[in-house]
Length: 417
Ligand code: SF4
Image: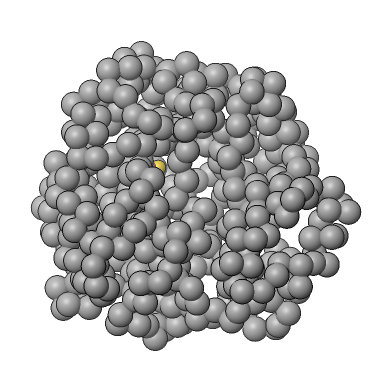
């Protein structure tokens, strides 16, 4: 599998050089001049750990959470003070973990962020379905949250055991969401679960929209090697049929596709922390992408707090990109939105897209993966599936390897991908 990603990397970066992350890191982050900057904050606590979940999380305790939030607020000020004045950013997303577990301190965190940054496109927060209660929703809305994303995974009872989850109370969900409104209510659903049919997936997405979502994210089930999930991946052909049929169904309904896996039924509904040109991440396991580097914080909450107590930012690994590596990264994540403006590429890199990747885009057009109009490349349904398929390889070849190591070692010497 990694042969595919290795060859693609060599072809696109025009170099045999691997993506190498090392423990050598910057004490000061240079982000003053970076445009289209997003913010991300990781809250790693959950009441119960789900067996399929690959994210950095730990079992909640009130004491550990208080210490973590104190450190997090100090990290925000530390990084915020690295530049003069307030920096304009697009959005702030809270992920986890279960951010609702620290709802009482959310406004304190957001106030710390507002001291250093001006947020222009709202604040998003992930919620576990059990936390979709009017009291919690009001608390987070009053703190400034404008978009929520609820990790449903599936409404189908037959999947709750596989996912290590309890049944979702649809009525309670619907009633809480009608009482407290948000600009975007997104629901995460998993597809390609064992034996899952188009009807199952259609039922899940219809239920999502009926219970109050205006946006859904349909993520493929990815079998990470380090999770204890016993579920095996669905064969490619079945997965393709499932994704094609649900995409056609959403098309018929007039829903908008705003990224490979996300669809909405209203114009303003958007939920994505991934399609930013640059971002700053706070908290354990959070990542930071700047003009020429990518950083990942330690996965250990204890080591994270120790670093912050010592007045040092918690970066564990850093990769310094070659220009071509940065271009590949930019192209990959921009294409995730299914749409790529060649002028934005030229603005970011100072060189025309055609000059750097004209041949690749001509080939993608010839193969029917993209269409081009007025300098904008859009993924076709076929292209979106193959992007999704490649993303699976990428996730297993790169993220699986990296997260597998980071979960065991707080500060590895280096990782070559
Ligand atoms: S799926 Fe959500 S609730 Fe379950 S362990 Fe992962 S972050 Fe926690």
